[in-house]
Amino acid sequence: MRLTFPWLDEKRHSHQRSHYDSPSSSRQAVNIPRFPSGRSNRGAAPDPQQASGTIVQIVINNKHKHGRVCVSNGKTYSHGESWHPSLRAFGVVECVLCTCNFTKQECKKISCPEEYPCKYPQKREGKCCKVCPEEMHGQNIGSKDLFCGEETLPVYESILLEEGDMVRKIAVETQRPPQIEIHVWKILKGVLNQFSIEKISKREFEERQEFKQITRTTPGQWKIFSEGEAEISELCETRVCRTELEDLVRILYLEKPDKSHC
Image 1 (tube, rainbow, N blue to C red):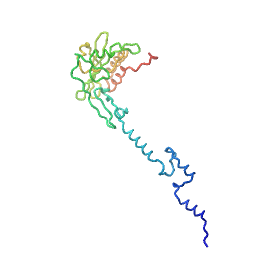
Image 2 (image 1 turned 180 degrees about the vertical axis):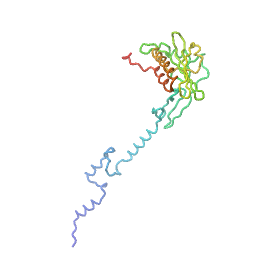
Image 3 (image 1 turned 90 degrees about the horizontal axis):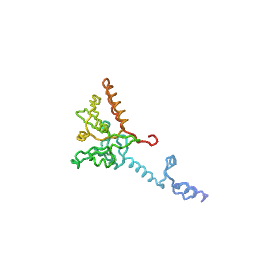
Image 4 (image 1 turned 135 degrees about the horizontal axis):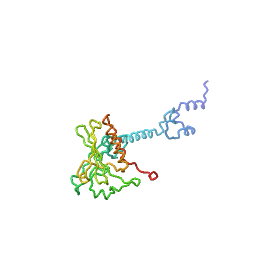
């Protein structure tokens, strides 16, 4: 005679049933949704009832976010952001504007007007196109700009390329006497080759179209630049010089003053 135990059959069937379908209150407590994390998911069996799609969506969004940037000269730009490119030999090129289009850099040349309302338009620091002296005066670009209470002087630059060789000119506008002092460097195949100084009137300088204002400096900084330039000129007669002039030009750029150190 075969004995049957209903409670044993019920236990056997309950064990064979998948734990995902368990109606027990203790199992429901285990299946409470949790925020995904690398530690909590490690070694745990995947549960199809949990919103695993949320994790996938986060990964996709992160990749999409990081893919919409451009990198130029070590700087990162977001999609739609614009900037002026910087070249080591020329510095910032104001007449070229680049825009980040997702991961691609799209650059275009800025077109300036062929005619100006004034006779002698001038270059302004940080601008591609020239402006009339009246506009520059109205925007506080006069020679009375101060740095820690010291008068500053406008500094101009011109770079000409001829068959791989370069002629770089650094000019400053002095008030005593009122003239333009131009320092000319010839760079042959990347090597500083020849140095000379030229002094002209402000009117003559305004007729020259190749100069652009790059910064303002103090008479003290210009003196340091001139003295260092003379030393470099002598030094480069007996050795090959490449970056010495570039390092010297940085002296002319004034850091933003801290009032407590003025």
